[in-house]
Length: 113
Image (tube, rainbow, N blue to C red):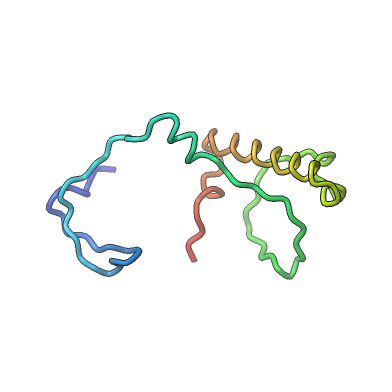
């Protein structure tokens, strides 16, 4: 796909305080400006382990093939804080690994509805 966001192009702002306003592109910056440290910081995923009632969940047609160890993630982790931390850490590692591989990109994007 060609680059169509060029200087002097009139655009509409879609988000935040200036939503709906017209703007003009003065200069576009397309180069990657993040160093390795910043990329690592922005690639972190915050995971949680929680018990939910089905009434508070809405199912979708999608599924993910990430397998968590059933011996680490079970009912007993809610009694001991150290076990819960270990389960949360394992989930974080699995999700970050999947994110860095670039698989299931839709899972790591913000929902828009």
